[in-house]
Amino acid sequence: MPDSVHVKGPAVLDADGARALVASYAAVSPTAAAKDIGRIDAHMGRFIALSPICMVATADAAGKQDVTPRGDPPGAFKVLDEKTLAIADRPGNNRLDTLKNLLENPEISLIFLLPGVAETVRVAGTAALSVDPELLASMAVQGKAPRCAIVITVRQAYLHCAKALIRSKLWDGAYAVPKGTFPSISRMVGDQVGFTEEQKKIAEARTEIAYRDGLWAPIP
Image (cartoon, rainbow, N blue to C red; front, side):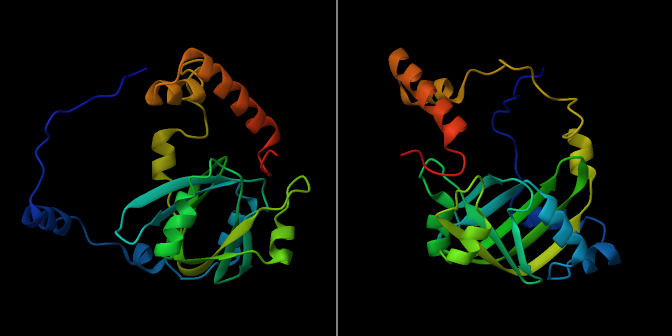
């Protein structure tokens, strides 16, 4: 298994050089240029309905970006109509990076993935928060509704080709690392923030409970 490679002080292009580089790429194909249809059609709607995970990108007012994974059983991501999606906000660590960004900047982008399928669905638009009881009830898992939902008004929507997932061999497991390659997340974060051994053990126990009992509702 290769280790991370650290390159010290790589040369980078100035603004003119970067513009010249981008301009040197081949022209976009007519199909690629036209495939953003700006709405969720039947193909993308079915894909999203079957998808158990999406990546959500947001930014604050200053443009500082955040990307977070959102995972749920198939059917939990809702296509409300061809211009509207909704995803649940499930229990997490309460950093609330996504929600706080949306308070400042409603722009949002999502990539939906479907295990076993190398293509993806890309969506972008603007988001608002909802506590509509009917919507939240429709997103309940194991009888537990989310505290709120993120409702996206779709501006951009298209199918993305399979090259990245083929190169990464994401679904065939070729690059899967053996269990135990890394210590638990509680131990790694504990190292980063200076936990004692006892604090790491307590954090591991709490994480185990959260993973077992707190996936769809906060633990009391």
